Image (cartoon, rainbow, N blue to C red; front, side, top):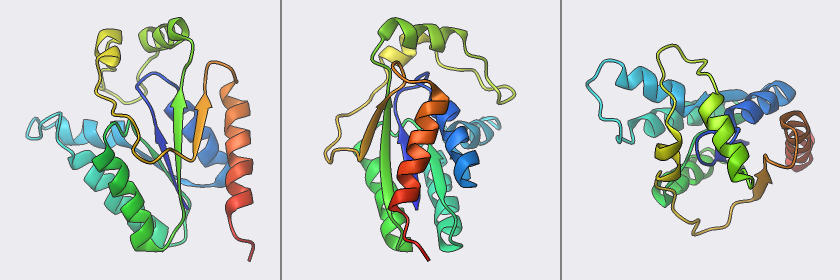
Length: 171
């Protein structure tokens, strides 16, 4: 199964994605880590889709091996959303689109402005950059939308892991 986390920076995607990965023993593909590695040599443009292309190729490899894969990304445009669905289709696996939101704007801003990067050298986007970030409406509604303002990350991760396990076929 391919689980694709989407949402603006500072929402809590990585916090919840890593917890879900621990519950499910899933592979975690974090676009921030991949893009930071690609951009650190200064040969790749920041707005390049290369990070997504690399992550999707790694996801396909792991899906073919039978692993659950969690893609942790902003996923702001329909082209990237379709590409993730194509990865699932090409590997014969189920895809689950999970959009995270934070309905409390003040809380979202507080998180964005106080969070620390756990990727050495990665500079997190400013609040101004987050609120002006391109994020297109979904052409196909996501499977789930979770609000990180109203539930604790542990509760959301457990809820999501239970939901995912219920969707997986039993051997």
